[in-house]
Structures are given as C-alpha cells and as structure tokens.
Image (tube, rainbow, N blue to C red):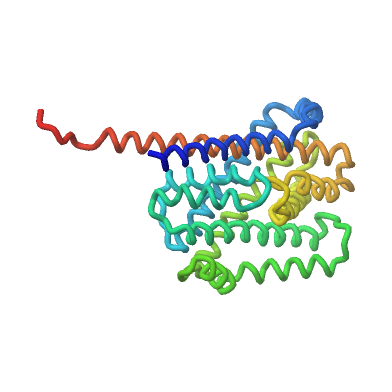
Length: 305
C-alpha cells in the first residue's frame, strides 16, 4: 500500500512538473501565439494538428520497434500509452525524465529497465541522426541556406549516416541494454521509413501553418525544423528544446520568411507539437485503461451461481 501511494505521488508530481514547464516555455509569448493563430486559417491549423498527430504516431511505432529489438515486445495499446505518457517527461529539463517514466511504466509488463533505457536512447539517436541527415540533404541540394560552409554540412551528413548503420546501432544498444540488441538491415529500413514519414508530416504541417506560402517551401521548412529539432534533443538543459529549437529555426528561415514570419511559424509549430503530445498521451492512456477494464470485467466468476 505504501509503495502504491508513493508511486501515485510520483506520477502526480511528474504531471504537475510537465504542466509547469510546458506553460513556462510559452509564458510571455501568448500574445504572439494568438496573433499568429489569427493570421492562419482554422482549416490550416486543424490540418497541421492532424499531421503532427500522425507524425507522432509514426515515432511511437519507432519506439515500439526499438523496444522489440531490445527484447521487449509490448502490447500495442500498453506500449503506445507507455511511450506517449513517458514522452511528456521531455518538457522537464534534462532528457532522462521521459526515459525514466517509460522504464517505470514498462516495468508493469515485466520489461527490464535496461531494455527500456536502451530503446529510449536509441530513439533519441534516430531522431538526431535522421533529422541531421534530412536537413543536410536539403541544404546540399540548395533548398535551405545555412550560415556555415558546405564542408560542415557534408561532415554532418556523413556522421549521421554512420550513426544509423545497423552495426553501430547494435553495438550501442547492446552495451546499454546488457543483452544483444538485434537490429538488422530490415529493421533499419523500417525505422528510417517511419522517421521519414514523421519528418514529412511535420513539414507539410508547417506549410499549412504558413498561409500564402508556396508548397515548394516545404523542403526548406522541413529541413529547418528537422535540424532545429535535433539541436533541441542534444541541448538537454532545455525542456523539449524550448528556446534552442526555436532560435535555430528562426535563424535558418529568416532569409526566406523574415524575422517576424519565422518567429510566428516557430511559435505555431511549438504550440501544435505541445498540444499533440498531450493529446496522444491522454488518448493512448485512456485506451490502455479501457482495455484493462474490459479484460477485468471479462474474467469468469469464481463463485457458483
């Protein structure tokens, strides 16, 4: 009973901390957010929100696959509930909270903590590596201007591709998990396809949040967002990359949109992703709880009638 109360108190404290830091990240900029929303059509905002949800769902399947190769095959609803609720921890400074929350929740399915930690770290690695690779390709083909020499972009692309090789992922994951992490070429192609779907969905969402902009800007928007997102993951002191992500995003898109336009788009993207994170966490958690209740109610009675 004491352990149950202790865990309940920790979960409440976790959610309170998430809400506080998420609010803090947008505090003082609500007027700018409101102005940006008024300049965007309701249909565009709704479409962007749906696309962000789909992109997040793709990343959820990335995490589930990484859990499987780390030796933990979770049920779909429980697994996605664990992932999305745990992901709320990224809004607390320090990148360990989301992985810690996922490890605690996955433990209810008898998953070793080291397996969850390995999957969580590999998940962050795939985000950084694919984000850097995608943005580097956009830069090299001339879709996005960056304030550093081409050689730096080539180095970033080569490093990210190297980090995505199955042998590298296997060794890194196995060292953390304390067991063999079986990532083969098929797993790699599937994970890359899911991450490509996620980045594509986020890119189209950015166009929808930019009324009047041509669709040809999608590559620049997507490249800037992917690189900014990756930088936010690396800077662990910033909750969910608050500040760092937006700053780089604005720098990269200022030549295309100007400072006001780039800032407005950065804020709208932040609001869309924050709202989508909360929606996915609440939706999958409710779905997992409903499944447990149905299973409980379906048990045969032990007492004679």
